[in-house]
Length: 327
Length: 181
Image (spheres, rainbow over the protein chains, first blue to last red):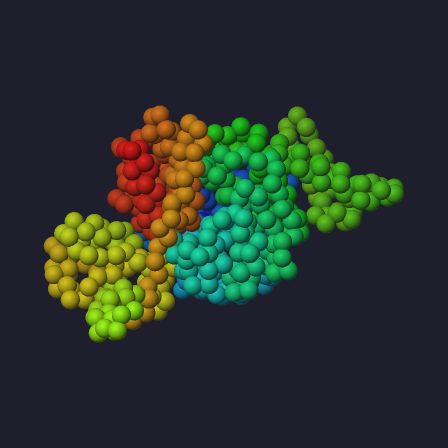
């Protein structure tokens, strides 16, 4: 099961854990509803939409209210420290939490106690803490934007706010910054850098880039990075190889943005609504490529696909797809 | 260099001066309040990053001339913003990012400060989007500010609590400055 850990912008929202669903543009967890705007609710909504399409079971959420004072985050850190070691998740995504190195380390130690190690994804505040702790390499995927990549590349910066001037936040320097982040061991196993061009990289260098369709206005929109991380998390949970999932997520997020016809004033829920259609298109394209790559196979099943998925049922009228991991 | 140049008193480097101290607070929001109070009272202070030994992940400190410690503490006590501790500066402090990036989308204008972006409608001056950042007050700030005009929206300085909130304040000030031009 996929677990997502983060905060909601409501100080009165007490620590809540449970299965998450999406109804009428609101996240539902244990009878509570949260409007999907940006931040962790946007990530959750994108993951739910993706998971539904892939026929996944519901995902599990760990949510608490925090408006920046850090109290909610500390309560959640404490809860995770006590309970995560006994849990069973195949993927955990950490998101908007108040960066706190000490608490981060305790949570990471709790994860080490889990019987089976999950795929670990970090973005936003928790990624900041992961980098600053010196344990970035314990993670499988970070999803920084260009500014956050510059922060990862600056071995002295404890927060993007302190990234030194000579490490410029310049999209043209992304390949250099990726290299620098790995040299100083401040990067996860894979990096998905989101920007005008999305980059997938590991310590050997850049593996792939995605730059179309291009919607310049998405840079101004809050939450578009959150949706990308949410799609990637759900694809990884489906069993897809991490690098492949990251690239498909980047393509689907861009296409969803394109279909939303965004202006700088568009809100992220408009993009989330387009995720199923965009993902369907990207996965169909992937399947065609896979079939081409195994021409000669009598079954036509994409057994050689790296993502190892095959469509077993598709109800086009209900936009519902069921995927299963190929045998 | 003239022959007598070496006799002139050397300018003290701001980074190497040993006469500075830092005020450490519980929350970044308290730093922001203290900065307002001290600047309003004419003190020469700077908001900086803490030295590595006291960094926790989302910190700001106030650098001040040690010689003014008593006066500064009195001012802060009167305002009800008391620092958690006061320590002398022993190593260079981290400087906040101070570069702005401007993007003109035609009908909309975006200002980025550090990792935070603020976008307004140029005609109405309504804040239409806030993006970037990773601290938990970012979604809260967006919730409170988006949809309101630049002049009527609550200021990040007033309702923000983290470094991302502070960066958004810088973007907000730059946007306000540009709108007044």
